[in-house]
Image (cartoon, rainbow over the protein chains, first blue to last red):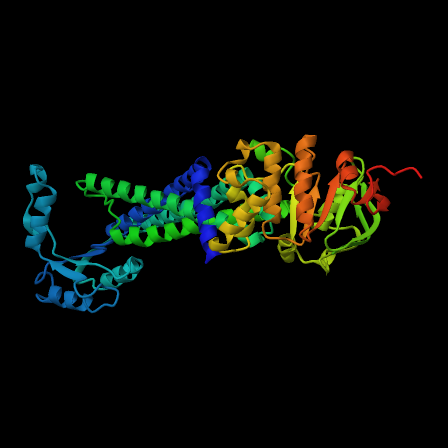
Length: 314
Length: 229
């Protein structure tokens, strides 16, 4: 208990006495993790928006008019009922029917204000079945099945090309975002290790004197590890806070920008924020270990390691 | 208490700092290691502290062969050996009291034990009134007294001193030697490397004279220079 108290006190006193170096380490963690966490948030925003864009109608089957040219009067209802049983179709409301009247309403909404386009015979607009799939990769199979119903189905349209492009873009952005987060996270560890090594180098005399009076290597390490943990935690906390606040503010400010949603949700920040805090602590510990192990290895001895006068220069 | 048996130390580059050195020190003995610069005095101190490994030979400290001591046990050796160096090796950011207490804190002693022991040892070295001062506020002699206090605070059976008066004027040096003599009278074995003629001659203790890493002379109640017969 005495040792623990002493070690914690040493760590806190050292943090207070070396504010500039501590600030450097905290800043290193803060900058690296802000960039890494920021990249992750941007990636999440893109992922959520891609998902949102992927939702909705994937396949449209335009139908021949019922009761005309040999198409049975109940052909539309029968086809809809059949489509609704397909396993590729999202349940329960993955397939729905849009009759000619609804199609005309939709048409009017789309081309509102364009009188020349609205001056058409509404009866030429076909009824249709709109289908949302459980997996957009199934669009070809569904389109093929629909095309087999030649008597009822006039034409099948899918958003296949656009969906594939969106998927490709999403995959690229995902890889880029995660790659950036990983690279920036690793650079955070390197930066912390380097900064803590500098901090240890600045206090090498203290380490030598601890060895001189019989402190074990672990006993020397612990205050530095605690310092690294605290520095990592502070930097990570500042990074998470800044990205969280910044992202929330941005989401609030851009709510009117309906095509793109910036809000990634509190759950995301809680989950990843906690992970980043842990990462900051871990990076501090790893940085301290790396910095200190090399120093302890280099200064196996004590008497020869501190040349005359170095203490006075600190 | 300390035994060196055919100890040889060769540094990288081939410099021989100790060559087949053998001698033994009994408990409570005060021994001077003397000789010109580069004679191997400091090297022997460092070898006895396991600050450096020997090239050949054996060294026993307090009954243990320290040449085969695993690295993780070296701190335990150092806890039983007090050390005093020419450059004091004090922490400038700690007060006199904190510097002395530091040696006990790393051993995990409770604060209730540390405080009276620090006061006691500072009283011994005559610095009770300067417990709250920082090293830079002290004279060289006072700083060396703090260093002696830190080395002695956990009552080690052995003290190794490497030129403890090297940075001090003759009058202050006498004060430090009186202090070491007083500690020696408590039964502590002291080995002191020095090239201070006056001190060695005045103390009239055992003298092991070195030159080019070899023991040239080993005399009880000796002098710095060989007395012509």
